Structure formats: C-alpha cells, structure tokens
Length: 352
View 1: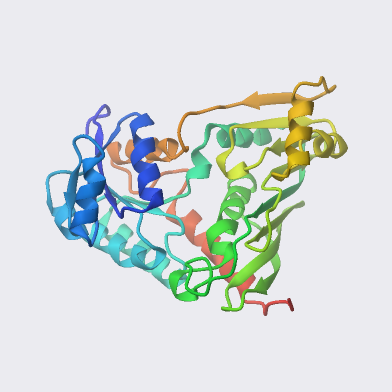
View 2 (view 1 turned 45 degrees about the horizontal axis):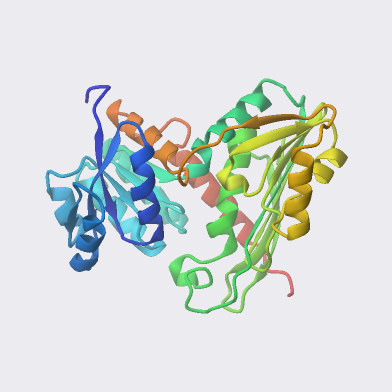
C-alpha cells in the first residue's frame, strides 16, 4: 500500500463502543469508516444510515467479502471475538479487536498462531497506550525526569450493582474486574516498566464466582507496581509513579489521560491532585490547579473525542506499512497480560 493511502474500516457490532469508534474515526488521519455489520441487518443498516458513505451488512462474512473495506474493528461481545478474529485472519483481512481480545489464554494463543501462519495484521484495541499523554509519560520515565522509578500505583474501580446475567459478572461472557478494568493498568505497567519478575495477587469473588475486586503486586527489578481494580466501589482512578527525584501523577481517569503532573513529593501530590469523583475531591483539584506549587510541572495533552482516534491511526499506519503487528502493542503484549490475569486468578479468592 502507498504511505498516504486512507484505510477503509468496517465495524463488527453496533453497541456503545462501536458508536465511539465511528465517532472518533472522523478525528483520525488516514482512516475512514466505510461499513458496519451485525447479525441483525436492520441494526446494521440503521447504524450505517447515521454515517455518510457507510454501508450496512447482515454478517461479518458478507462485509469481509465486499469491496467496501480493508480492515475490521471487532466491537462485539467478548465471547464472539475469537471466532470473528479467526475468520478475518483466514480471509487475510487486518483486524483490530476490542479489549479483551479474549479472556481465554488458549484462544489468544490460537489467534497468535493463525496470524503468524497467515502473516495477517492483528492488534488488541488497548487504546490507552496510544494517548499522547501516555506516550509522554513513557518518554519522561525513560529520560529519568523523576529519577529511578521505585513504585507504580494504580486504582481503577467503578461501582456496579451485581446482576448475574450482566457481562460484568457472567463468567461465560468473560466477566470479572481484572478482564474489564485491570487489563488497563497491567498493560500500562508493562508498557512503562517491562516484564515483571514476580506477581502476587488477592481477589474477592462476586456471587457468580468472577472477581468483584482484585489487588495485584508486580515486581520489576527493584520497582513494585500495586494495582487495584473492582466493581465494588468508585475508586480514585488515578495512577502514580514514584521516582527518587519526584512523583508523577496521571489524573483521573488515567485510562483517558489528558495530562500528567510532576510533584517534588508524594505529600504534595496527594494534597493537590487526589483521585476520585467526590465533590470534595473535585473542589480540591480545582483549587490547587490555580494555586502556585513550588516544584510542580504540568503537561497537558488535550484532545477532541473519546480518544480512540490514536489507536485507529496507529493500526492504520501499521497496515499501510504491511506490518503484521503494531510495534508498541504486539500480540505478545496481549498474551503477557492474559498470563498475568490468569496467574492472579489461580489463587483462591479471599473471604468477602
């Protein structure tokens, strides 16, 4: 493909994440939405009618076999990802799969082997990795801006009432806090720090048996990552990275980072930039935004839309180059994160 070619994307699925993708692709360079498919052709056609130049299809097969697209974004429920990804690979169609790519390690390995055999592009849609602020944080760590990293802390939790048939709590649908929420900080911790040397974890089960909440401790050659996730509460939803020369804070919600700040101490970071969405937390953050704090530096990376445009651009660029993987988010990364989650859930749950 030529380096300036616009990649024509098709979406499999018509749910909320598909709608966000359709909105954000308009902000992405070198990519355009051309088609959407659903098992319900009427839903696909209704979705398509809201977007100029988009065609609707009643199946993934018919969309792949058309001349309308050059890549597929899979935005269907978790349980459909495996089969649909394999269908795209078999057809030689580049594919971007909404996270989690799958919640079953053997399925992820099968996808990896199929993609390798076919030489087909496959990428998990870990969109947070591609946000400009996250890229800048990674560069700051590598450049020693906060010195030697001692600890990473992340908390991601949103309260959800237990419903046994909900995808969040149903094991058959890939439910659980680690797969839905924990995947983000685990992936980012590896993105910033590399591969962990050891993993310890504890988790608490929902009535359906999936993890309602979990805590992970990962060690990286002298650096510890402490990660909390859950459906049992509303968390601080911020990430802190402590170095021997300063504290870096990615404000809540860190998975949609618009900025980060560096403070000379943890005390100042907690005082000026607490996480959480309570009124007191919001007021304190607002107040300290306008107050001078000695030693604080702020770095803003505001963007329009939901933020999916950056992963769309990265995937489209890799496809244009004829790559089988996006270098900053390979299938090895996806599988490594799944192995960490599997290791965490291998231990028995703690008592409620």
